[in-house]
Image (cartoon, rainbow, N blue to C red; front, side):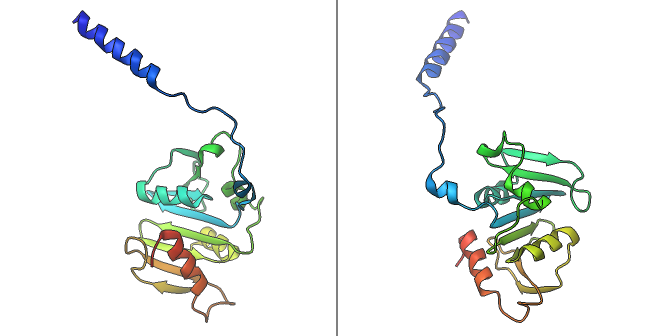
Length: 188
C-alpha cells in the first residue's frame, strides 16, 4: 500500500511539473478588438424561467447549445415579470463591475443605428429577431409584438423565427434581418 501511495505521489508531482503555466502577460486588445462595437447587438434567452442576456454573440450561441455560461452576473427578481436576470459574461468581463449588456438594458449605453437583437423563448421554441432597438426594448418589457413576419421551422434546430416589424417596415419582407439571422446561425 505504501508503494502504491509513493507511486501515485511521484506521478502527481511529475505531471504537475510537466504542466505549462498559464500565460499571465497582460493582453492588449488588437486594433479590431478595440474598435469592435459592443452596442450593435444584444441577445436574450428565456430559459428555465430565467432571462439570460448576452452582448457577445458567440457566448449566446454557446449558451443556446449548452444552457449554461461559465461566468455570469445574477439579479434575482429583476426581470420585467419578476424573473431572475442573468448576464452572461466573457472571461474578460468577469471582474468588471458592469458590462455592455447591462449598460444597454439600463439605458446607459445607446444602441447603434445598425442594431440586431434576438430573443429566444425556450418554452415556445421560437426566436424573435429585431432590427430596431425600440422594437426590441418594447418587446422585452411587454412581451408584445404587434407586427411580425413569421418563418416557421427556419431556425437552427427547426424553431419558428419571428421577425418583429414596426409601422415603418410592416409592408416589407425583412430581407436584411433574415440574412443576418441566417448568417449568424450558419444557415443557408
